[in-house]
Length: 446
Figure 1: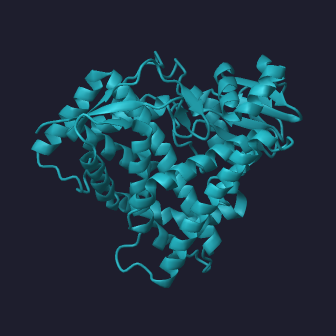
Figure 2: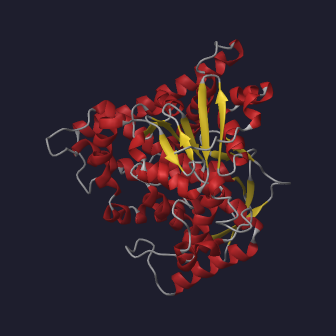
Figure 3: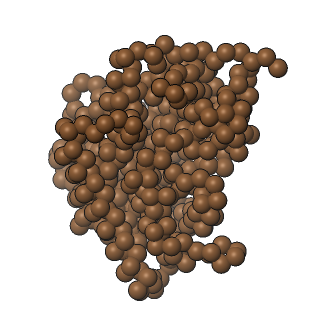
């Protein structure tokens, strides 16, 4: 069969484009993916990168032809921080880790974490004063770090939350830079920032290893948390995880369960503050649930509207905004052929802005995710957690966490945007806001 030539993306050959790729590789890749249409390619030196946005072809690549790909080499730069965790590993190591981590994300385990999320949200609310102006992203990171810390270790990390969150931020900023600079000479002006980032990685590593040693010495005396389950997990042939492997998965959980969810929540509350009708809907649902006597730690905790709002925020600002793969053999997709060795980039951010899937894609509209409308979505038309065998293992945990935080805050506080002008995105490992978003807390009188 004769295949069509994949359209070339013009910006890929310009010097300004290469400089942009060096300065912020994530932003450059995102910009290119948004101009690719259904498919487009560019070359970065000897590397051929194909951007794919058509949902049918995304399904082909990530589901039907998943075995034809391995993770993109640039993803491996994360290992400087996360080690060989699920975000970066491949092959037999990935299979082993995925199998051993899976029980911690079973539906019944996630239900058990609901009370943890609700209690942490109420504690955050109690710490805010009526009329106080808060840094929204910082508060969301503090809240999600508390939840992840309790789910991982059955203990509070509040006393070190701000420092730990800053260290994670420094580490992720450093990793993002490595993906564009790994083949270039060291630049003297970056030396100090790199030293600070490496010191931050060492502090996170030391904290996690200390927790692992303590748990090995004294196993949990109550329901198993994530750490206990990782330490006790064994494959059918008796293989278990070493302390290094447990460390890698714990830090991976910190990154995936803290950074990504906090970023989505930051954008969500920025959006609801600009859409009072959505805020009113959240308050109404929370009030009706309270009046009906629904307990926050009930295994049946379910707030359909809060869940729709969270899903719509993830559509506009997905936690993982790019998915990278490398073809290990030639792969046909539509009328095109992706050659062996090519890097493939799929951008949920771009897929979610396809007007054929989501009319008026820039409009914030939670009604897109009513059960009826969700059933109409094409395969791979909505992929905030990826799709296929390598889909995010913690997707259901993130949905639970987000739904509970949104609903709990809506019951007790109204966040009023006091940030002037528009806020853009700053693509790094996640789609962070380009500047600080400040909100004024307005306590809702019961």
